[in-house]
Length: 313
Image (tube, rainbow, N blue to C red; front, top):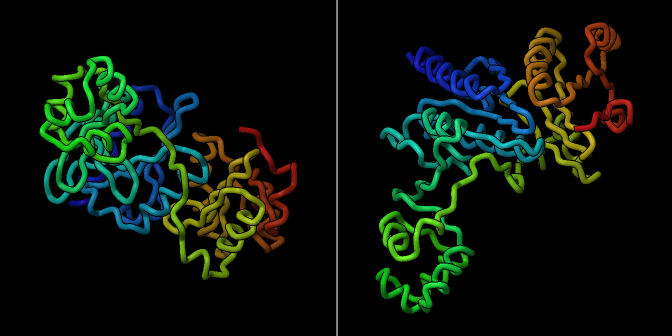
């Protein structure tokens, strides 16, 4: 039942992306879609997307969300959750929801935004809908109306401090207050929400700090050199690495069959978002086999620093 629903939801997302002329690839590893951090990679020109599809936002666990968030930060690519329900209720269209810092929207919202027909002005937080306000334009509009902070506070039925915080961008403005504010100052104060903005920082991963696996060692090694890197367990690669000059997806797997499966799937990412696939292996025979297939192979972490492996983006 879930599989059919999931496939239908994925198909609708693919249709909207295709209609907007995105290049698309669907990832099918791991096989369990509920434990997969990335389902779709898409690109159109400079706009690239990492997408997680799920029936309900609540079904995205912290582990997968954290992984997607950190991959998006590492590769400097926006990430989205596409879903239809939240807290067992249908999600509203043209509203941005959130799951562990990741923007979440409906398929119809994605279609409307990609087509340029509408912009997202509302977001949902703590059981209430809020409006995104341009704090600079809010202050300018208030001053142009020759209203003091107190004047506007009185008109809105809030405190002077609340208006001050609105203008600083440190307090959320619910939809009721926003409607009053628009009546007084005009629609120019509204600010569209940018769902295509990559994360500006990573989420600390205690697993990386405590582990000595090859993947976590690469992340530690990269961090010491000032590179962005994250360890992954729920997608087609084991490490995402961004040196500033090059973006890599690195596969580390001792079992040959699983290694080949992950490399085949990670090739999809390479095609769409132009990362460089790299396999980290120690077996000479496997290394030779992969090189004959055109896969970039290294046998140690230090080889990733070689200029021959760098690719400009």
